[in-house]
Length: 185
Image 1 (cartoon, rainbow, N blue to C red):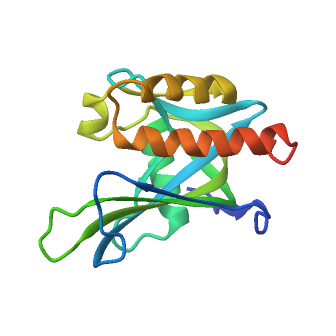
Image 2 (cartoon, rainbow, N blue to C red):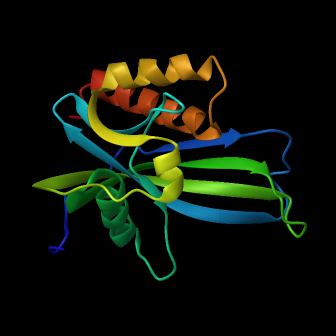
């Protein structure tokens, strides 16, 4: 992998979205999982992962493995899920925190904390290497218009969908707001 250069300094309008799934004591003991998500733009399009099983769209990304920094995890996830080569990591656009009841008895809440970074990918693409659960969910990367992606996920929210669909829909809405205001892309 090539050296990854920073794209930009701090983003002036970071989002901080909190979602609670079910009855959760968010003030108690929390077990936290940290994830990173890549926001890759090409004109008015975003690089997203579509699930043929759920019908929703999500940003490429996932959990940070032991010993990884955010940039390394972003590069690994883009390569695994999309076959894309990360060449630059830009501004941290914002974060989400999703709370759900903890299954572990020592904790009151389980929190998935996701950091969304503006990323640039190179011209060299390879075959994605999805994880077994991603294969089961029919994950396929592709370029999607921002408005189309937001509408697709809003439609999925009306029915039975994974909890992450609410998170990704909120982030897509935030990006659409910025894009409409001329702040993004």
